[in-house]
Image 1 (cartoon, rainbow, N blue to C red):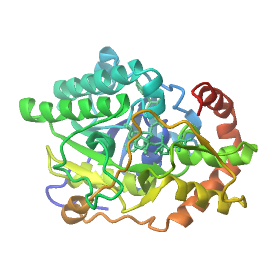
Image 2: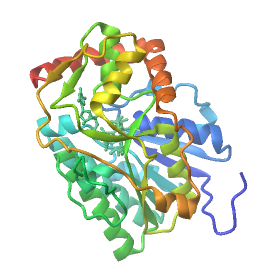
Image 3: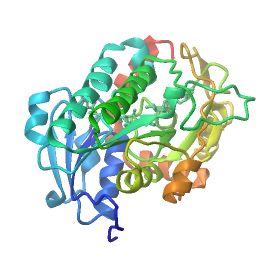
Amino acid sequence: MAAQQGEFAPTSIIVTGGAGFIGSNFVHWVVENQPGVHVTVLDALTYAGNMANLDGIPADRMTFVHGDICDAELLDRVVPGHDAIIHFAAESHNDNSIADPAPFVRTNVEGTFQLLEACRRYDVRFHHISTDEVYGDLALDDPARFTESTPYHPSSPYSSTKASSDMLVRAWVRTYGLRATISNCSNNYGPRQHVEKFIPRQITNILCGIRPKLYGDGRNVRDWIHTEDHSRAVWDILTRGRIGETYLIGAYGERSNIDVLRAILQRMGKDPDDFDWVRDRPGHDRRYAIDPSKLMRELGWRPVHTDFSEGLDATIAWYRDNEGWWRGAKRATEERYARQGQ
Ligand code: NAD
Ligand code: TDX
């Protein structure tokens, strides 16, 4: 698609965390939908990064750099010559942040700081991927949704480090005039999500003959969005969003955990009570809900994957068809959960 007047039209972008779940889905989306764009993936390949996530990307469309976003000297070698950094890399799992917060502070706060400094040195556009969790949680009976002006109120070590990184981005825009935007998205689902996360954990448990595990009373609500709708929103904000602005991304997909689990059980031919209630997550956020109207109004974005049952069926099919992708991580993940009583 030709760029409109005044639109930012990058031809060479860095995607940090491009070997992870949402980052790799974004890389596939860009390669399929933006033919003039070359992607450099910068990824440390932690337990959550997987080169197989980038299978099928033509060699002339992507360069892979194995490295750490906290490494300022590496950034000095990689960043010059690129038009933009889209920053997905993070430690992303709440339960891990409760067990050991240190890597979250390092990657999410220090790593974002190093990227901002590199963008400042080389005058590169920055888009920061963040989460709705920075706003804390809502009560189940509260009609409100999060908006761009909701006060920050993070609950977990993970969400507090994401909130910190958002604050750094805002300060770099205001103080140094950095060309940056922020998006805060709700819970993503789709292919290639690590088996530690809720939906893949339950699907792969059933495929392995392990009973699914539900935290607490199961009534916590998450606002689900298909990762491909997230990718398109990020591109719209990168190319047409206003510098210095925050955009919330969500698809009106609020569902309780027990409803999601029962939908998975039903679609996989299991009894609705065929799961275990387990210890609740400490500090467990009750409900997330996004008001995406700014993104819709200003940039005309709309979710395409609006049928959750259809998206769930496709996701279940992906895990059925790609056992080799998840089998290795499954045992270590379940051993860790067992130690936590979850
Ligand atoms: P993920 O854990 O699947 O992937 C993270 C990727 O970052 C991995 O490839 C990992 O190797 C890489 N990485 C980690 N530390 C690094 C470092 N120091 N240097 C370079 N690379 C490093 O995460 P995800 O679920 O795909 O989330 C991606 C981003 O989206 C995160 O910033 C997260 O906060 C945000 N987000 C996630 C969701 C969700 O539902 N998963 C929702 C909203 C926002
Ligand atoms: O086995 C489980 N049982 C269970 O009941 C797991 C793994 C989770 N849960 C619950 C906890 C949450 O209420 O399911 C819900 C979703 O859990 P996660 O998949 O761990 O996601 P969440 O904590 O909501 O955070 C996710 O969305 C926001 C991502 O992991 C974050 O990176 C993102 O910022």
